Image (tube, rainbow, N blue to C red; front, side):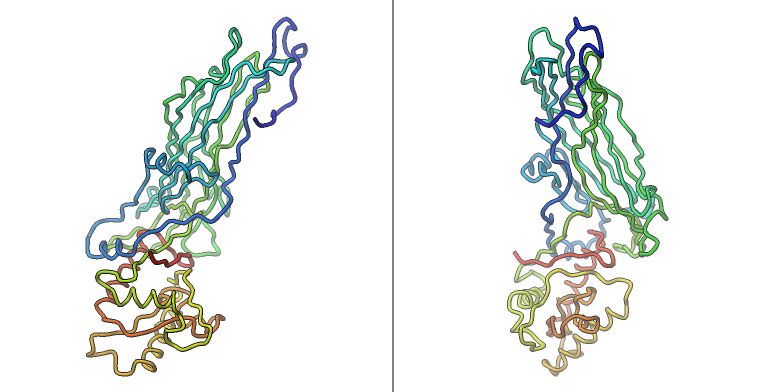
Length: 407
């Protein structure tokens, strides 16, 4: 049980001494979204397959049932982030107690559960793309204590609100819904509410590209007691999460532009491969060797450590070109005769489109922390197209980090 919010109002000061007074006690829970780094895994093969279709970007959202299936993660203060577009949080056994004064005796105590499901967005219309939606469900209301003749905590009225704090300005996030109507705990049982947060174009950080606006969302519960309950309205937070709005005009898929988006950003995407991927087995084997046996790869550099956490490069075309050029030098030195007419071209890891690529030493990193080798050009094309689709589908923007892993 958490501490009381306000000093107790004595019966004599608040109402006739012949009537008992009751203190409203609301438990304070751990709601701040801090802790270990979250991640989600997504297979490269999924994007390779999608590269051959004409399906639009269709975010893989979650729902109440799937959220409950991931209860062990969803009950943490950070909630469960399925992917950049799907978030859920479960707050169980939220208690409301009525304490009779001056005896400090609990005369009524109820619990309830809140399930929050969040959806990001992607679109070429900023109104649809720079938008996050939440559905909040109230259920499992149960009475633990009820003294006969005493008021019931079920009669305490609740209102809910999804607050948002944006950066770089308060205008970077707008709450389009506001506070819900007030209902008693009993009336909310089995109920649902929805909230919408938006970010207008131009409200992002002017010092960075893509009109990025970041911030936090917090679900607040307002408790409205009525006489003879004290103290007055009490606000408690349920959870806190993070988001990012953007207007990255270079996000395309199959010729369709998706220039605006909103994601849950407190998560690290992990791009998952198998050692022998159908369709590009030599490419996947090359990446596996780079990450698991870097000393066997070219160029030969003592103590080589090839990174698996990578940062996308989009705007710096010179650096992307330098990555590819350095990789080709390595292939020409160690694998003479490959190239035109051989059905092979030079594959590199880390990818050409990342800051950790073959030319990273030109930008301050140690030399040679990469691998380059010839692979069938058809395989290289297939894998490369899949990576491009991953960037678009998961909204990996310039400077965003992701990790390459093997299963």
